[in-house]
Image 1 (cartoon, one colour):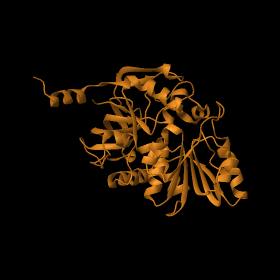
Image 2: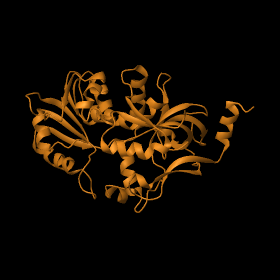
Image 3: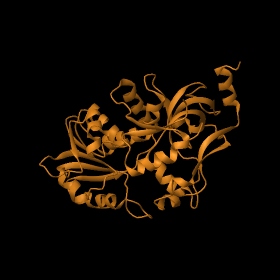
Image 4: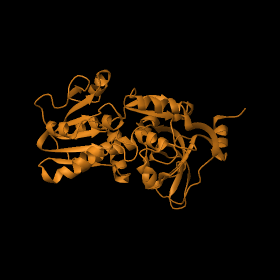
Length: 341
């Protein structure tokens, strides 16, 4: 009788894998599950047997090829350069490149890879860390991109200090759910903004106060915030400034909406242009895939000061459903694509 170890060995030695694939830009209709060749790894990469992969807005942008500016930036003019979507990853190392020194076959890791909606994915050594024992693969898969974005927005661009009052817009989402927890762990008083049905989830994350954006605006009361983290919200810049303390800091994370060419970067550009002429710091940023940030996030996860709020779980076949649900705004926290069990 074939044992589990025998089946595992066969899986590792095979040369093909199941993966979500897209050969053109478009809606979720362009996605299919196919059997394709496994990725080959460079000297500075490892091959990961994927346990789980995270779902975020970047997957939608790379699927649709919008805004079109990203195509010019090198993601592929007429079709995606990498036909397999997915970036967040957690799993086990099954092969290492010649220059890899931090990992060995069998190590449990998480971080950022390429084409992670697949049974196997390649990732650079510099974008991976060891998975803490107390953290599940699903939690790890939900953590990296959203977690380091929130951490960099708070501590890098936001310069958060203990005792400050922080407003997190989009507090129930992937980045927002980490921003609430990290801000609390760093000693802030946190107000989270979400819809009615998601307020309890935001409170569970540790928010001291919540705002239901379907019933009130962020500037309706007299409360002013030292730091506002706007995770893809659509509040006008004037409203954000009214809610901000006279010398407070606004950090706009990414951006949605806008036109097909440049996307929702209008507010970000206006904020950057206005900032030198006012006392408030008005800024936006895109996170960097920094090993230091991933290691800092792993330390928070290991200590338990932050926990990945895993939302729904989807299989490879359900990736189109997952992306449609994310686009419809029906998901809470960070959903994951599961490859095992």
